[in-house]
Length: 306
Image (cartoon, rainbow, N blue to C red; front, side, top):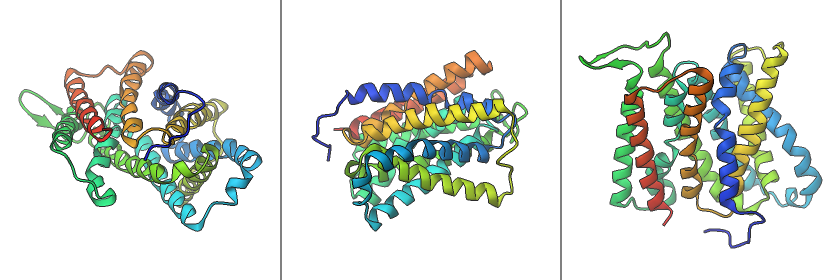
């Protein structure tokens, strides 16, 4: 149920600012990947965001911290696990595939929310949502194979453009599933807490998970150049603190479907930035597949927002 409390600023304005911020994520990550591992970037992103937000939570919302129950902690911990796995898989996908493919596939989260709704939310799937799911999945198939296949004749290979696009596309899809779980839990828990308290816990749990993964793979966490630290800091401040926090704030006042459909603008913004900055021009097949994905997600989200 939507929160009837009057928001201090228009929620759609906050969503727009968040959208602009998250569109920079893949560009900053690509620059950081020149020296740092994807897992380290994910850990830095969440750790820095947590360190920046926790002081505010403790100083201004101490009374709310006392109201957090064990059940709330468990839900926020699970949300943090989903968020950590989302960033681990999606950031890693950028090593193997193009920005356009990665961001458009990871934007499939509303489709996975719709698919999971009958199981976890006990909701039926209307025929219009089924149509949207089929269109989006068709588009994801087109995008998924566009980097590794050529036509005519149909020839597919695991490698493409010196990368492993099929691996990257699969990782982006897994990232979409993970962020769908993160959004679903956020809608359940977020409305009971102020934004700094909620994201302070969730980002904190996600940061711990990422740090444990980095330690498990024995990857370096220190010793990078100042420029790499700068890129990772920008990833934490703009896409994470401003971008994702804007989406979490909006979950207090808007349905999950409305918030998730807003993320449809990220592939467009990221693809434009990748073309201008990284010189990655999307092919017409990728544009077609991306268009199908966005159309399908729009149908799904519009129906669920009713």
